[in-house]
Every structure is written in C-alpha cells, then in structure tokens.
View: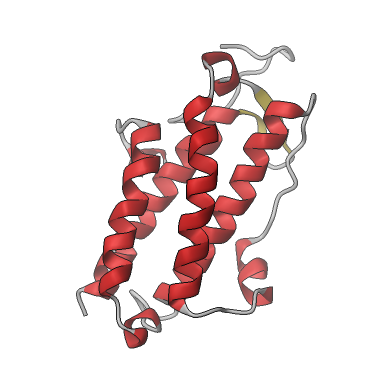
Length: 171
C-alpha cells in the first residue's frame, strides 16, 4: 500500500529489527502468548536470578522486564497517538538513557508493571480494523511507518528478549 505522500510505509520485513524474530507468527497471537511465557519464567525466578544477566555487560532480568515495561508504555502511546492524531510524528527515545534514568524497582514489581501495561494495551491492539492497521505516521529516523509495524516490532522484540530470560532461568 502506498501512503498519501507517495512513499512506501515500512513493512514487516523491511527495516524492522525484529521482523526475522517474529517470523511468520500471527502478531496479535504473539502479543497475547509471549507475555504468558514470560510470566511462567518470572514466577520461577529467584530474587538472585532477577539480578543475573544473560551475558557479560548485558541487562539483568529485572532490567529486561523494566525495558519491556518501558517499551510497552511507549509503543502503546504511539499506537494511540497514531490512531487519533493526523500527521502524527513519533518522538524517538533512547532506551539506554531511559534505563539509566529509571529507578530500578524489584524484579517482581517491574514484571507486574509490564504485565499490567500489556493487559491494558492488548484489547486496543485486538480491536484494530484493517484501515487502522495500515494507518501511517512519521518517524524522524525511520520515515513513514504504519501502526501495524509498531505491533510487529513489539511482538518480535519480546520474542528476542524471551531467549535472554530463558538463558537466565536456566542458571
């Protein structure tokens, strides 16, 4: 589909850093299933494991859940704004700056925040019409995009980090 400006919106397999991780999975199903997989892992993690990283110099399990909560917050807002604001322009953010600024709560607390945000966002995501799925907006660094790209990225992003949680839980 070509946008009103004549340029091609970013598609699932074009310039989506998590498109390959998502693969051919149904986006909405992944957005519903992956948090439950993460919940099962989180329930098994000890306080000490929440402080472990999957690799040297990488975020801990608690920080990863904080990152997922922050991403859920930002991407949920982006979807809402893209659906309700004509000519919406995304405000980019730096995940590392957010992580440095955020006071870290306990692993269990950030898990609860992430899961609550997903439960808040999922009904909206499930309700999108085909026209809303392809509604375009502008990202200053990536150009014209569509709402569906946000959801595809969010779903692939979680699957990407699921592997990190599995590594931590195996320790």
